[in-house]
Amino acid sequence: MKIVGLAGSIVGSKTRNAMNYLSKEISENYRDIEFTLLDLADYDIQFSDGRDYLEYEGDTGYVTKKIMEADAVIIGTPIFQASIPATLKNIFDLLPANAFLDKVVGMFVTAGTSKHYLVAEQQLKMVLAYMKAQIVQSYVFIEENDFYRKKIINEDVIVRLNRLIEDTIILTKTYSSIRKAREAEYNF
Image (cartoon, rainbow, N blue to C red; front, top):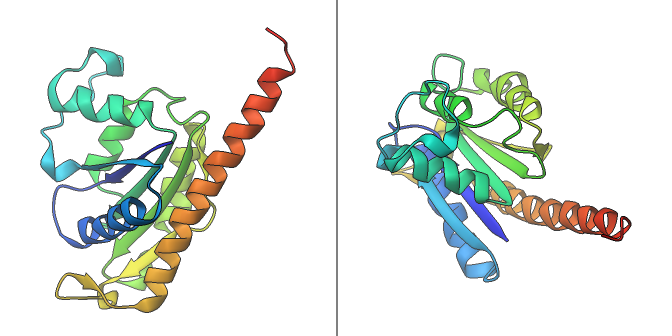
């Protein structure tokens, strides 16, 4: 199983630190999973110009192809000005409308205030549903005060991140076995 962790901003450290935690947990506890961390701060991504994602080269081509090859994606995003960052929206624009068909997508959000709690619910989930994702229903919301010196200090956040990993893996395996069973019915 291939899981991509997508850190959806080019600034800040909280989202990357939470994604680093997920990466470490998956690599230590789920050895059969190939996890790839894509932190958008590490790549030079072009703006979407309407081309098919396969036509992009360099970092843009690499990132979009990794996402398309994944069985599941865990998106981590900060909230800026009560919205997802433009860098993350650009990734969605680079991908085809059905990019997440047959993929499970989980998410966590980092924000400076609890006032941004519903951004994932009212923006991110709607975009992912449009792109045909099987969405892990419970996402993890991480506030500024859950971090101290760039480390997650809230034990409840750690528990919820571990649950996000587990739910993403279980749903991916479940949907995969259902699809295989359905395909076997056709006898081709």
